[in-house]
Image 1: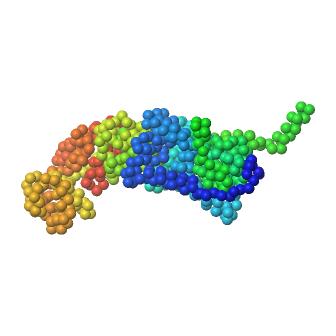
Image 2 (image 1 turned 90 degrees about the vertical axis):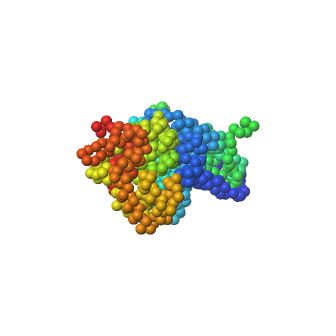
Image 3 (image 1 turned 60 degrees about the vertical axis):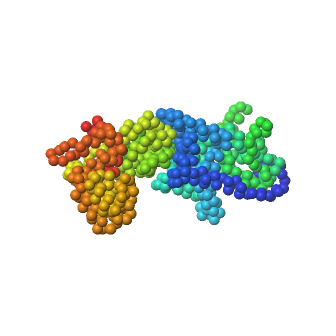
Length: 284
Length: 296
């Protein structure tokens, strides 16, 4: 299908095809290393895990975990609210689901599992094609698990939560709970590429809402685009690019689902995609 | 005309009885229902035993604690003696929540209770500020028969008879040094040519590093212990090591011939007595969440 991009011939040039990936992977490893270091080397910069932590003493709390805790216990604590607001403000600034791409250790493992997925498909080891599901599924997970927390008084989803589980495993050493993470990665390799992140992860839901309003966005330049669709092949959540690249009705990738991972920017050989701060031109 | 249009639409519907919209609706409903069922059922599968784990100081009652713990592990990170651990998958809903095993590492009720301060959700209650306010559980004398106090045996003498490793020696020596009287100190100083016994730790280090390694010297030390005044007193180590002994959580009540430790209401269940008990399997055990009233 031809898209609304305007350039006829690709300039086929991208000086830094790994720029954002290298930056992002180092950020994920770096942040999780600080968590690890605070326990093993007593370097008190970033203490805790991804469920809740303190950065130089300032409380940070994952919204989904905090909502579960508040609904299950019916207790609201100042420290948790401070953590929630700090995280909320931070990700409103730097782009909602950027948590998924730039912080979440499961996101990194899932990206690596994506390579295996590609390998398995390429060599025809699995007959079944890549399965896709509704991206709304994560909202159901989100609301159902919060509802269950409210009525049962347990933060039940935390048993399966790969984000908190993996973060605890990184800091405090591996446990049997890694079984869930391993099986999820297995499913991603065999059945659905990046299935958890794309369709299921309820941890992402608050970040999606924040990301909708965040000014950090991917900008699409139709005058450079040759409709090659390389960006959609690498995108973590390919549906976010449709409005821009396929339909040409928006300039910015406005969907909150966009993880700001920069894979599309790396993949584009025509300089048609890039990070921009929306509204900045209006401010100046 | 109108009729025809409607009929056309009806025919269309018949061709695909399950339209995309109704399919989505159906699958969504069944998905939600399924998740609720599985979630509800898992409540019973993963339910943790309420009295199983000994929690850090300030923990709310078990069900509220499980609900309000965000499983971040910050208490484990700040714990100065590093005795806290996070529960695993076998503990069901308690996965990721902190607990301690007192025999391996007991809570020292650190000043300021850093674990409580670190808790972001108040699962460890910020209302308590001192160790003596904690209500972790209660110590009970599990096996009075093996208790050294009831047998009027001194713990250091007992320790010397039941040495297993080199570390045991070091522990015994450092345990005995502060308990010596003046005559015994003098004898020790002369034997090892030490000038002053001002700093116990220094002497301890000296003994452990050099002289005490030889068997003859250690045998001399054994005799010193056996003939000391200390050897005549019976074991009091649970009270001596108790971090809140000013509150008198342990009282030695006299039975016919010996003394037996009786745990009082002020015991918070930190587990130091269980950790320090010199008998092979600690004769004291902490029962998590137990209160004095329940016990009586």
